[in-house]
Amino acid sequence: ATPTALLVGTGRGAQLGILIKGPEVLESTRTVDTVVLDKTGTVTTGRMSLVDVVVAGQRVPTPPPGAAGTSPGASGRVGPAASTGRAELLRLAGALEHASEHPIAQAIARAAADETGALPAVESFQNVPGKGVSGVVDGHAVLVGRDALLADWALTAPADIAAAKDAAEALGRTAVLVAWDGEVRGVLVVADQVKPTSAEAVAQLRSLGLTPVLLTGDNAAAARAIADEVGIDRVIAEVLPHDKVAVVKELQAEGRVVAMVGDGVNDAAALAQADLGLAMGTGTDAAIEASDITLVRGDLRSAADAIRLSRATLGTIR
Ligand code: ADP
Ligand code: MG
Image (tube, rainbow, N blue to C red; front, top):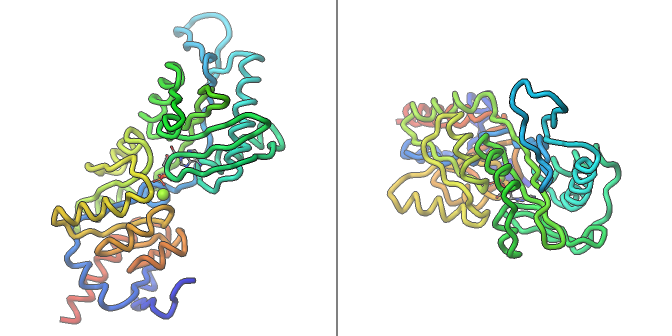
């Protein structure tokens, strides 16, 4: 549980939804020069939804403008055979993801249940942190995850699926591959949304003299697209959950004094390692425990407010 007794909210801080653990925290707000921002759940809402399903061998090229005939539709669906492939893909992937708590998994399981009805049971489920999930559904050995997970099983995506994945990632989306019985069968595209206040928050952090860095386990292209949207130059992507703390240590080894803002999903150890850890109040208890400051509102602008307020408080003490 949250060590509530340690949360020393100064009057003004509490009003702003900023809880500071103790007076010793204030000093580090003066020296920080770098702010590491976790992508999912911090810069973005972390509420994902399924936006596209592409089945291997079934996406037809979009006809040239004005061409007669049937349109393949937004998802490239081309009739009964294709929609059967889509339903099977969603059913097997959805069943597997139903057993995972990852936001990507929840988006996929929800959409699959909505479209195909009750999901089958899963046997020998395995979660591979930062990569995806595997298990047996309806007698099929199913994998859902990033290319690194499929590579562990010596699988690669066919050209049409690899292209669909690349196109989705270039838009800042997350694309996960679905394979069963030794073949990559399709790709599921989920989208998160940048919080409306994140760009302004990054600008405020910059004006406080902090260099922002985006940190994520997600793919580099999606991370770059999100970074561009909010005005961040430096991106460190495709970092496995247990390596996030090493990234903070490396930045510190470069001589930087590091603040880190995260929601605790995969990043509690990194929050603890940072010179100043700021937890999103919308995040996990582990994040709040590992951090020096809790931002009660899920708004990244509070990170800038917290640093500004702490520095001002130091100024009055002196
Ligand atoms: P983040 O740093 O954005 O929180 P994670 O470290 O949790 O990301 O995951 C990194 C990547 O691993 C995801 O973008 C996704 O490609 C893959 N992944 C992780 N968990 C799952 C899952 N349950 N289903 C599918 N893909 C997953
Ligand atoms: Mg995360």
